[in-house]
Length: 229
Image (tube, rainbow, N blue to C red; front, side):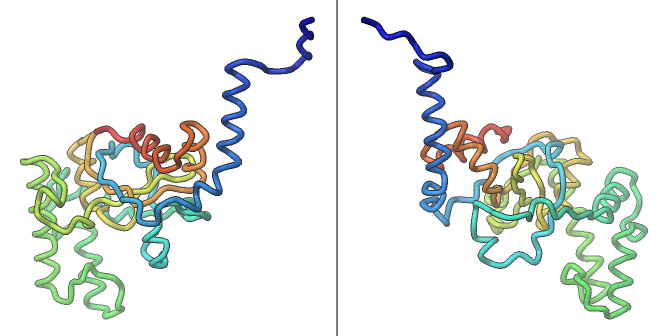
């Protein structure tokens, strides 16, 4: 005799899928513990228009810079760097001489005050002029030859625009590469190489629930969805 199905019981493929999802959730902490600390920090192409905010990574401890899965509220501590955006707009969109830009005036003021504030390693007025010449050369290179990675340019492989994925999977930019990022936006680029330095653990969990184990593959699959290359 065939026993009647109990009301509310889920059977078949749907039941297996739900069970599997539950197992993924229960197994996440174990998978996270086994996640490689030296997970590669990939350089992928992202759309600058998809970067939703800026986060301050300058004072992170070394351990946080090394890790790829990042806990805590780091992604909720948003900052503003309007002087960079305005300066790049002034010089490269409006044609204002760099000596009349907001950042130039600020850097000269910092130099003259001797306050010790970060001044892009410029210790003299000559250093400041050389700094802006470097910005102009970088913009001309991106405009005329396209945005190339540091590997393509023969530079430091860590000197890329550095971005992160927050708990919702939104791209946020850290402290490195802000000027080049703004140059790319002024030029209207929709695909720019950026180094993904880390992701929020909550977003990694959502990838694990969606794609299943192993966690490393689930995270790479989620990254591939966000990239444009």
